[in-house]
Image 1 (cartoon, rainbow, N blue to C red):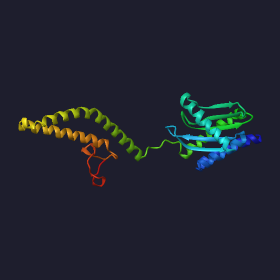
Image 2 (image 1 turned 90 degrees about the vertical axis):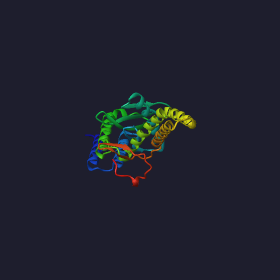
Image 3 (image 1 turned 90 degrees about the horizontal axis):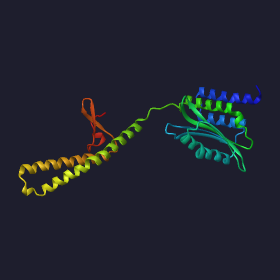
Length: 260
């Protein structure tokens, strides 16, 4: 084994050891990037880890200069990200001409079919990164294992706060639909009843009382839909033995009876 092969082996070994010891993911990844950049001749290297919505939740980088770091960041944001979204890009090695020729690569962080991040590198001058493709593939796989071992790559159960927020959003969406679909005919009913009640002197007592009941019921329905729209928290109360209903009363939370 020549000296360069020894360095490749040591970088991958140290990643595995760090993962087994539960060492800091950021420090471990940054150290691996720095050593790999020196070995391969990269001006900049980075690791991006994203969640299921493709939002970046971890970014670790190494670079010789801020210019190199900026060029790699631009490649990720302006090129690689769009190719992943529009063309399902997994891996690529690219060369760019001009006054300052450069070369770059992106390789996926993956667990089975799931892609949860990428390793990137940027090289100026002579192109040597393609000849290191086997090592770079092994490096990205080792970083992926390190991320998974740290717990960052595991699917986490949503928090109660997140579930409550989603539940509230669903209720408000339903309330908007109810307001749109119910309030239009309800307004017509209420308006016509009130027009009839304006002629109460011409109505017999029994009919007037029935129209007033219809008016009161229509106003109550309108009030309920408005309260649903104004919900900021979701409280429930028992409706039947196995069923709950949303509490839209004006009670304060500390006045509530126990609810599910």
